[in-house]
Amino acid sequence: MNDTKIALVTGANKGIGFAIAQGLGALGCTVAVGARDEVRREQAVERLRAAGVDAFGVALDVTSDDSVAAAAATLEQTAGRLDVLVNNAGIAGPIDGGTQDPTTLDLDVVRTVLDTNVFGVVRVTNAMLPLLTRARSPRIVNMSSTMGSLTLQPGPVLAAYAPSKSLLNSVTAQYARRLADTNVIVNAACPGFVATDFTGFNAPRTPEQGAAIAIRLATLPDDGPRGGFFDDAGVIPW
Ligand code: NAP
Image 1 (spheres, rainbow, N blue to C red):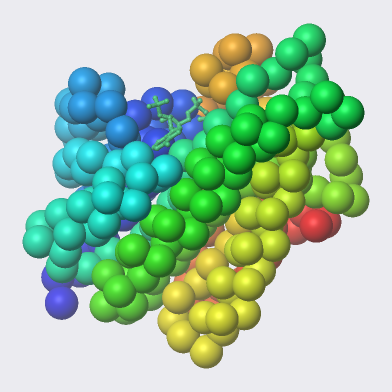
Image 2 (image 1 turned 90 degrees about the horizontal axis):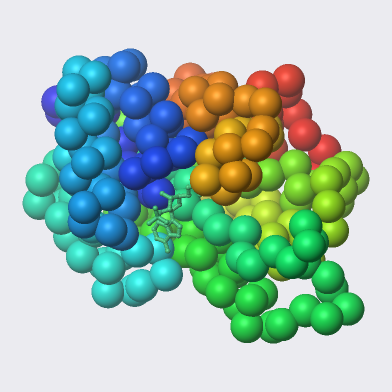
């Protein structure tokens, strides 16, 4: 088996996903840049190549069964396996006056946020698992948020976004249980409060800082932790 690791990062055209792609590339991975918009995807691939990363673009809208199936078929043909999957793509959904008020919540907003942040992760993970199980030490990282921690409950009231990350954490734990006796290691990560489009670039951490925990979990040794929720400081309470 070729020793170069193949990593797919969803939502890799900008923000934390781009920084994860760059960081994994700097470690020697070949990076599949999963992104839904062709122009933004190819620009990201060019920027990564200019930084010395072996990158290629994969059309990927995590809310579309067809798009995800086509992405898996592309990876099957080009790489034949997948060593790392980082489910990074995520959305907050509309925020009004700094909050998503549960007492007036539009359920269509909840459905949209869940479709990307949770169903998207399940859709992509299940499509990629046949490729992941062909790798020696497959790793899956789900980009969550401390906003999904029912213990901490930080930040503003966000009645669609925060529960989407709580559910993602729970889904992560179920995958880890299901895959416990395999070599597939699954964990959830929080990048911290990062300056990206997502936060209006009004946050203290850089995308590179936000990417660090995902990169660490994507490159865990075979005896690394499973089914956990981590940031740079260590374990995050559920
Ligand atoms: P961002 O700059 O808004 O980037 C989000 C990425 O997800 C973009 O590449 C976006 O693509 C992609 N995306 C959204 N919907 C998609 C879909 N249906 N299919 C494919 N790609 C899709 O946000 P970010 O700050 O880097 O956030 C990345 C992850 O970190 C998210 O899961 C977020 O919840 C999590 N997070 C962020 C923070 C923070 O402080 N920034 C804190 C905690 C957790 P387009 O360019 O096409 O929209």
